[in-house]
Length: 336
Image (tube, rainbow, N blue to C red):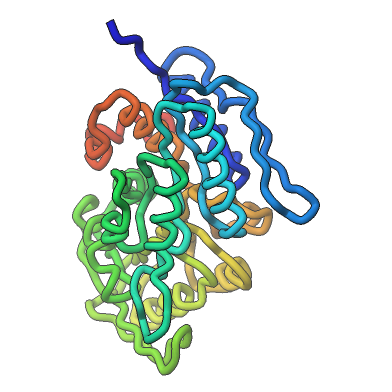
């Protein structure tokens, strides 16, 4: 009879807090302590990355937890080198758990003589010996096709729906907003889950990164508006969209963003904006400035990611986590 192989975790340095939360969650499900394997990941003086795994991983089902967030290049190299160390240590299977997949915004050639970096990163991941990728809210879903290995793309919308229902109560005056035409499908998914109407903010640019004009397609008068997007970087466009919605008669504006990149002046802009709150996930480790901001609230993804890891290891459905009936009990401790 084939022996059962338990999933084992190894944590990179990009998001230690999330790695520990996933391990705690798996401990709760399994009724025994689950901890990332003992390893050291450090830098030489010239910043080369060195990895040494102390625990035996021969024949193990390994899951590397590592977002490729800022510093993106360092964290990406860490992921690749950890995978190489595991492969050379005869791990049975290596899965990369990448809650935030960096370089995803470079998914096509926007002009002549530019790279498709997302495809390059996909190739690097596969060449490093990784056999499966578990990620969340890819910037463009077609990036799954850049890989020649299985990719499980989880969605934050089911968790956001639970959060909205828990915190808003009466949803009769709630309206979901897509911040641009390209994000309509993502916003529609949340709108459908909470039974709310949908509106769109149309942006017109004079130059890349510079929004000249915004118009709202839909009536937001006296509505509690929820802007939905996958990435918030410098928050300039998000804050301008919130101001536009208030000008158009919205009662209040909330934002639900999967990946809080929040670089540069983002936190200051959010603090001074007309937005009531910004809700993000913990796919990227919060900086002290983000953690201290009263307007920013973080929703945990560890319950969903831990369950997905166990489902992959057991050979059961990951897509079942898209259903509220399945995800709801997993989040009972957060949303009664």
